[in-house]
Length: 321
Image 1 (cartoon, one colour):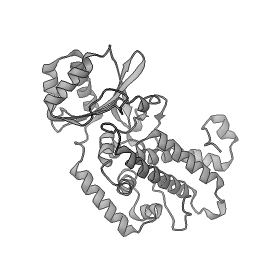
Image 2 (cartoon, one colour):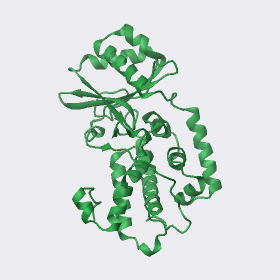
Image 3 (cartoon, helix red, strand yellow):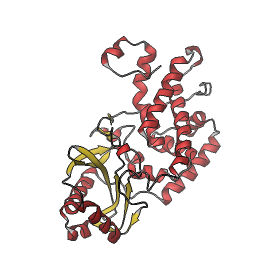
Image 4 (cartoon, one colour):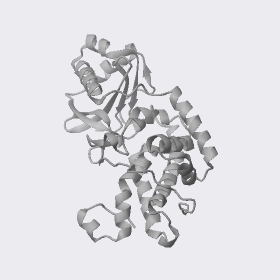
């Protein structure tokens, strides 16, 4: 049984069960994606959730929305555990798979400061359970009792996990959030200088302690570690851009924040996200080059999906799976 497709005609003909699932799909996508950072895993989570929902006896479900959320979160958590082991052998830095969001997604469930690409990189340093608690608490505003019910933990245990996660995130916290207009302006200046070979401007726009993540996944030439320091970043930029054909630059929004598509001959070569330092110079550069993460980047555009109110998770909600 495949997950239903959200086509207008299909929705009109669907039963209440399917319509309800489709109404919750954007929230479920956001939860799963923020936990896994991978679109394929997110789509698998949605499929798992739909199959469980379609087979569930309605008489045993006190809160349908809470039931769907619980299935999705636990399915995503299981996939995150498996992915965390696999990423230990990933060739070079691992970055989340880019997901384009609509420009008005500032308050979207999949967007916002709490789930920025830079923060998702930091979340990779947490255990899967710590990440789940952090995302549910900080990005989706679930209270500790709700999270405890979702993860089959006590509220006390959840509070401890949240405390540890916040401490670890704070120690590696991405630089301060900047206004999107400022990020776009600095990104444009950085790219103009990089593509034009203007070293003087690059020296001005890059912070002395700038860091560069390049995720090639073994499929494209990329650094096998995070590059730190302006001099090293300048050398790598100059070396990598020298052999490229003409690039087209297209501003977009990725996970609700400013980003850039670098396009060669109508094919996406990279997705670039710039993070500003405290002095509004470039403090972090995240370049997703792995073709496996770019093939569906335009198709996978996520609209704004607000979480209108907290989702209650009653104690009698049936466990997932």
